[in-house]
Image 1 (cartoon, rainbow, N blue to C red):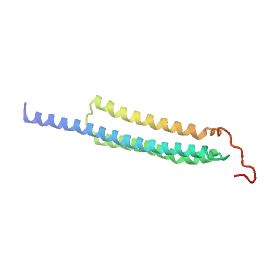
Image 2 (image 1 turned 30 degrees about the horizontal axis):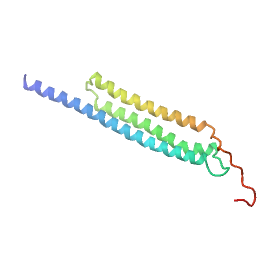
Image 3 (image 1 turned 60 degrees about the vertical axis):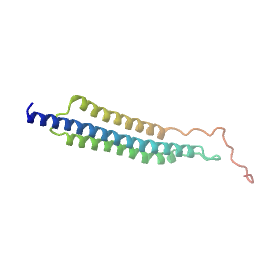
Length: 148
């Protein structure tokens, strides 16, 4: 085997290693972004529950719930922008390179899965923003004058 062939095999191996490293980095970024979104969703759920089940006869209005959920929708949109940016960076890094079909399929699968998760989160937010808050069970009667 000639020296040039050995060098070419090493270079091909390095390109493969680089592509795999980029895939791992993209997966980690997506996982961290999803963890942050999950944390925010948990926070929103806690806030919505707190607002919805307030003491006494106070009930959350739909506007209060929407006010809590609206900023989260921006975060989901930000995740979509992040995914598009990562997809573009990977495309730039691999421009002119031959990406093995198996690796391309893995890259595509990561972005399809991340987009699916973002879409599911958006649907859940939209459904919850339109839902009527549940009644307090059991209903609480307003205090009579002089009672505490």
